Length: 77
Image (cartoon, rainbow, N blue to C red; front, side, top):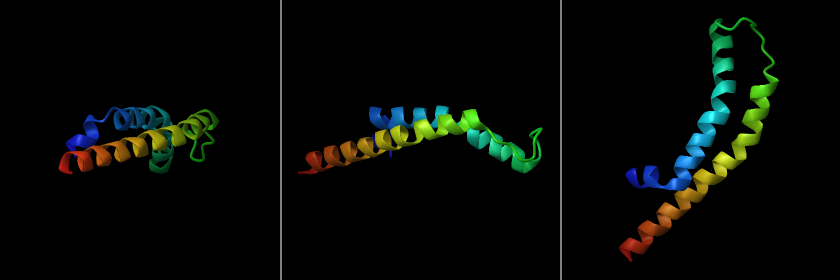
């Protein structure tokens, strides 16, 4: 697990996901809990942020996983 968290690609992907996904997920969670001023929110801005950060974050994490697995194979071979 430490190998994965040391990889720069994975860390960048997790930061992108944290910055891009947290606002929308927080609004949805607060609305479900009844703590948001609108019980049926339509958060366009956070939704667009989520949309534009989903694939880059996912791609960075996948590239990082592949790089870690390749480096593990190279060390054992």
